Image (cartoon, rainbow, N blue to C red; front, side, top):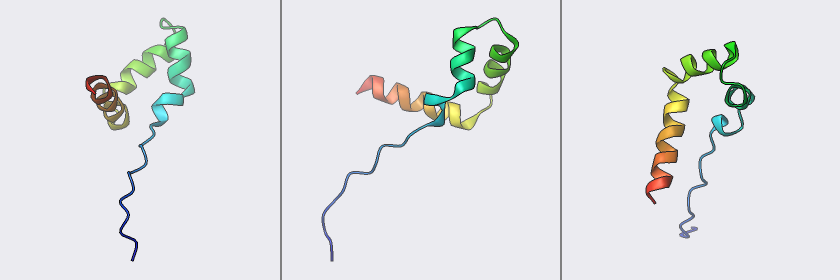
Length: 59
């Protein structure tokens, strides 16, 4: 029986590498950027990513 405690792998978020996000940040006045901002209002993945960033900032 293996009794070694392994640290859980850090969760990755697709938002970190999202092409739509990168394009929206580069050109914030485009329709793509408006769709992105609308999307972030209800996306549970984005909210989890933001909570993760806030947690890292506190550490």
